[in-house]
Image 1 (tube, helix red, strand yellow):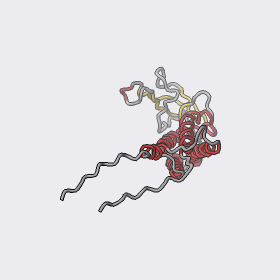
Image 2 (spheres, one colour):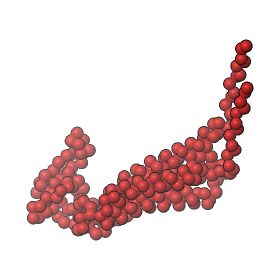
Image 3 (cartoon, rainbow, N blue to C red):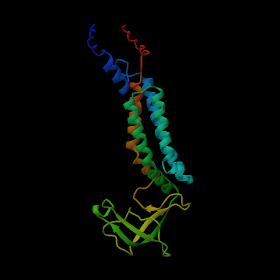
Image 4 (cartoon, rainbow, N blue to C red):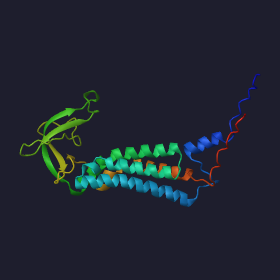
Length: 236
């Protein structure tokens, strides 16, 4: 006896809505989002960015490599992502915020070193011993790198690119700022140095991270608990 084949059931009308809610967040509100929800997302983003940058600055200031190298910042970025998961934010938004947090954590160590040099660094005039780079094909991305030595002839272990230009020649004087405590490597002196200027390069990443956190938290808002899945009837 032949069995009758049942036609395939049409996709449930709420399937696309469920996928969109899972990926981007439900955002179950009409009109502008509640102000407290925006504030919650803003606070989460600010605290996350402050933790990422703050650990890098503290590590560079105290000479703790685990903090200064950005490893602790990556942990802070993961903590922010975990918070978004707990509030049931969309998976895509969690991924975007995580990537932004990682990028900020990787950029923070250089800015942290600039803060240390701006606050307690000392400037010394050193002598250029050789000039390297200057072309994209030389592996230096077009930058000129200067090897320098102090007045006593002791060379620095790092090459300086700030202040090293095409017209720089061996024997020229180059101003270098260094940390007396040796916590961060020396670098060439720039105009308008300061702690705020050192952190200015992170402003774009911080703004993007805070914005992503606000959007993720706002879109995580739910008016009701999603209904349980219906059990499919078993045909005998």
